[in-house]
Length: 208
Ligand SMILES: CC(C)(COP(=O)(O)OP(=O)(O)OC[C@H]1O[C@@H](n2cnc3c(N)ncnc32)[C@H](O)[C@@H]1OP(=O)(O)O)[C@@H](O)C(=O)NCCC(=O)NCCS
Image (tube, rainbow, N blue to C red):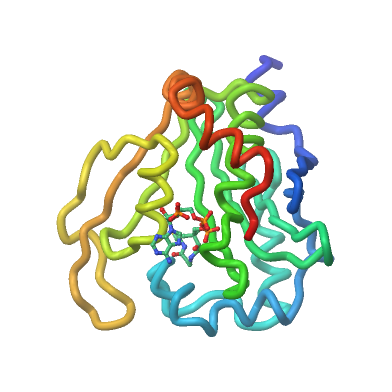
């Protein structure tokens, strides 16, 4: 069996921490009614452009089961102070070409725009680029999703392409453009060198 095959099939138990938060692989024991309630928020539905989402604890457990945690990962972001699950990452890895597609939501409204994503960004990217040896990270963002676009632009991503009228708004049916972003391992290294102060602030813990 090749190294790529072994990496693709071996489930991963990921854990890393930052001054205020930690990130770890989720299991079905993490399913809660509170997580299910995230999808009641208009912000979350609009951000993900979905009318639905797991709305009960049992539906969340079913959702978690879909991830093999080898090539399709589901990670939770937790507050170290109270162990509350505040957000999730999904990651789809293509081991053959070293690419991973990442998606994220900070589901707890009280934690949004307080620096959660900025704080977990350096160890998150270092894990996939350095520990797993992947080469390029990709993400998509609806053109209407200003928060995520702001985050991607602030932290070094390149906008490669815009697919015009690619999606229909789940809120009002309007057609929306979809932006395709990427960040290579080299570009992440270069961004760290070019932004030492921002990087240090992120590493010191930006949760406010
Ligand atoms: C988008 C999201 C993942 C960002 O995570 P976060 O922890 O809230 O972001 P941070 O506080 O670390 O902010 C990082 C940067 O993102 C941008 N940003 C975050 N929230 C923003 C907001 N409400 N308005 C504008 N820009 C915002 C800013 O550029 C910010 O940098 P700044 O603090 O210097 O202004 C999170 O707010 C979220 O999940 N929102 C709702 C659902 C959603 O839209 N998900 C994305 C689906 S693809």
